[in-house]
Length: 229
Length: 229
DNA sequence: TTTGGAAATGTAAATATCACACTTATAAAT
DNA sequence: ATTTATAAGTGTGATATTTACATTTCCAAA
Image (tube, rainbow over all chains, first blue to last red; front, side):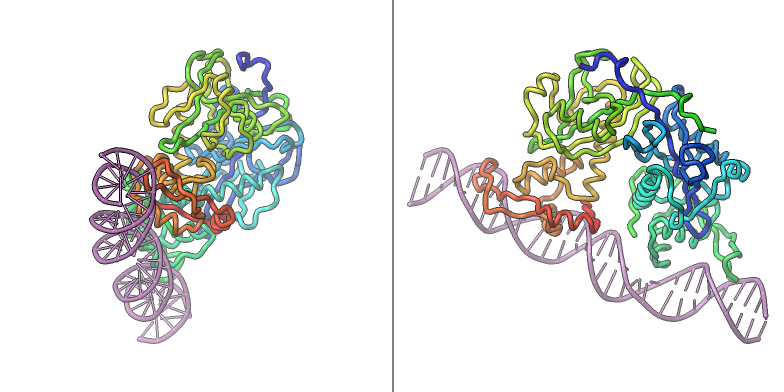
């Protein structure tokens, strides 16, 4: 009968972050080049160890801030990975988190300091340990999330065009969407504010910028909501 | 720079199991009455600690077998809980798993040995620590699962009536379903085999028994599949 | 003034979902 | 043998959602 904790094994608990960003065309992840052993010189997720005086969410947040300098980022716990020899140096359990950030916000200096780089998810290099599986699982989770609630808040700049939003959906879901149907669907959600302002970069005509209406978004989300392609 | 694991904190890692069963009428969970400190005498999920030589799935399995005697049960990792003082005795992270079992299969002796008891999810007692949150999250996950793939394989006996399957869905989703629409939908899935045999317990007329067609089920699931009420 | 190129827009057909009520089969009672 | 009580079993039309699809508009640059 378990009545004495002191005989139980204690284990190292790592936290690894899958950091998603979107650069107007492609869904990307931020990876670091390890300058420490094991697997020095290889690409990996940003990670760290859980400390006694913090919970997992806090640890994930700390690790993200360390690399990007950004606070108050959207993060969600993904899964815990525990294969016995997943880290050859020592038995370690890793709790993976995924974060959605606006790719323009990150701190260049920190990125350099960690030899970090943004990769298209479709073109990312092989990662150490079980990090590839973590990324795969995170993408699946993000796809699921997409089907349950509007996304974009976190990954897009405050003002964006319909086309950018569509590209974001397309890059997450990895499929083409008809633009009329997409716009009809998004408009039916009634969560965007159309601004008078136009983005003139993409065409002569220019395309209207939009913002999320956070009030309406929250209300909709509370009601429970479904986006189906 | 993290180049030396040895300075990092090591932590106790618990695994707690939310064990779901279905008794032809209600969705239930299996709880134990703790005969050890802390919180002796209170209701709790079945749990244990991760050992160095096993991974989390194996630990969850071991813990489930300890209480029910059943092997090869459907289990899925739910979430990791890490509030600093969640266990007043010592800093402990808990990885929660949920299991779906056929309620008829469990081992009575073991259940008694642990003072365990099946509770309707709607009538379960207050649990220790953060176990109530775990159960709530597990129910949500189960609901989600229900919307993505057929369930029943794990919770029902091999042969079951349409009405039992409907009751299962109703108890998971916590809402009434029209029986004609339900049957139409299930039949449209084309994953059941209707047997010649009838269950005569529930009515004079008797109702036909069905089995899952595992082949078809797997094929459908691979194609990706959605059940919407 | 013309031109090139992305932005913007609407509808009809197909499909999926929903609401809804009567007949049938059988065991038990008479 | 006949009646009765009870859950099982069955189908359709109305409504909502999803899909497929092509043309016109706007503006900067030439």
